[in-house]
Image (cartoon, rainbow, N blue to C red):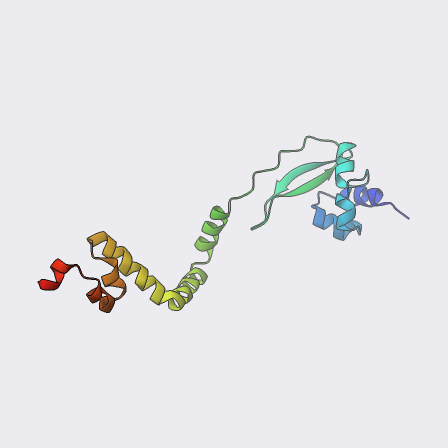
Length: 149
């Protein structure tokens, strides 16, 4: 029976692999790859038996290491992609979905948005807010000089 260390090294003899590919190909659990023992990926890296060949990016998650058999210089892990950049890419790639979601949100929040627009317009041109929010209530809150005229 082979140990996990032997299984991983045998799998990497066939070529470069990510941890997910090692789980499938070497028939080991993901926990055993990351448990910190000498048979884990970190233990194999520290022993100089494998190294990170490169980092791959998937569409939404963090960068994934690609391991290669043998000693070597591991490149530095790239910085994570900020959420704003991910969202910008998504909006660019799926404009129809974004438009549909915006229209759905607008339909649900039209009254609230219209009220906010009225309030911001009133502030901009100097109309008292009570008059914008409720014209009937504004009659009772008029200043004395406004009631005579």
